[in-house]
Length: 386
Ligand code: F3S
Image 1 (cartoon, protein in one colour):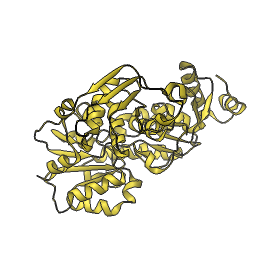
Image 2 (cartoon, helix red, strand yellow; image 1 turned 180 degrees about the vertical axis):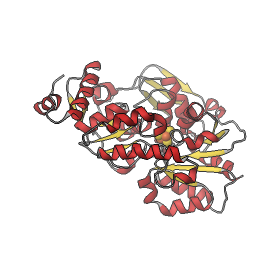
Image 3 (tube, protein in one colour; image 1 turned 30 degrees about the horizontal axis):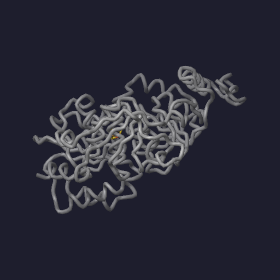
Image 4 (cartoon, protein in one colour; image 1 turned 60 degrees about the vertical axis):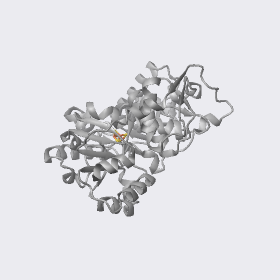
């Protein structure tokens, strides 16, 4: 793999032991995937931020590092809201450990935004190379923004953040971004606006690790977010294209529809929306956009929650949308920043949780140990208030 003179100096330890180790991680990765060089990145998003997922060993590894990041870098959701962790039933012991993880990342120069929706923080543009690690963020960056990132693990994202570069392979190369399977969505009189998470859940199972080309749908940005997050969870989709909607499908060099074609029938989508009792409701997986907060605020107007209702959001988005947040919280729902349904221990106490997300639908049973139901946002509000 080609290294320039500065890369060589880092590798020789001239910039300290931590950077040397980080360069070794990138080189090892590059060799496995036959990367020809390193490509500069504009930002990094680092997973392994919840004490629930990294534990004592991960914390010790972080505490032994001695260098700061070279590009704007943020974290994946952590295990609790940094300030109001008591409000969602987090134990003092967990909070103390989580705070140690936060401190360790802060020391490395990482910005304390803990979110799977870094694209709302305006840190990326079309064509940027990134080292992001959370699967739904990776999917959105590649597919909706047209930036380029592989799905990094926590250590490789951190290594890229400290070096400011990542191995140039996989989805960083345009030739590897062509669609491999067509998935047509049977939409009848039109796809229900709340069904994109469920469509993504089904499409991810079909696509596996292939790049899908979805046809017959016209999703909005929030619907693309739901679609991609679910495909990344039920399959391993890090990039997808939607005919005439996502940016790379409009390029003259984009290849035409793949021959392999599968149809998702409307009855399959509808069959996921079964009715049964739930004891908690959670939305904001991926974290809510300002538009989604606005919709929730109007759906909850004049209503009171009868069961736990969590709304997950990035702190930056929460802080700049306090008008909607106050309206939502007036109903009894809790708008929770920094964390999420899967990485927080707060969800583990429920029997059946209702979500509006195909990704949460795929992950909650294993990650939180409870049953899950999927509904539209309207159905989630109804379940939480009746
Ligand atoms: Fe984000 Fe957590 Fe869902 S990281 S996509 S809210 S599982």
